[in-house]
Length: 193
Image (cartoon, rainbow, N blue to C red; front, side, top):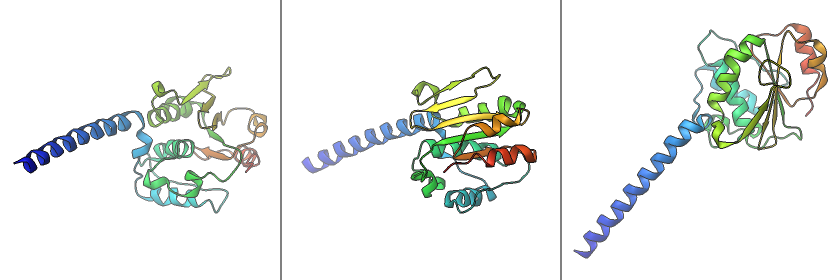
């Protein structure tokens, strides 16, 4: 009957649309992984605490392999590129409340080059999407990152002179591994909201 043919056509259209949406999702999973990050265990509570932004300093401690580095990278990604990831819906991530949009990552140089930067690139929108550019600025790693959303990211190391940590202001500072106390205080004093 005519009604049956119309229903069959509608089903075919819907099936085609589902295939198209599945392809888009697969591309997003491949090229925008941060949209699908799921934290493990205590890291979910840590993200919720950060998102509420009631304190100046937060810390997460745990064994290797629980996702601390992936979490650090996804904090960056979800600040810079707000989206519908359910773990980053707090105002800090969706409506950043401060004028300056500057992130600083601080760790040792080896960790930066061998772990943080490759992990960050794995979570950020794929390079071929052109959402960011990096500069070395005479450093042996990608020191400065500029994003098309107005955010900047600077990478510093614990072995750099303390004056490097005291120079520029930042809105968010993320430290991988506990820093030496002078490095910690120099960085915290640079926070400008």
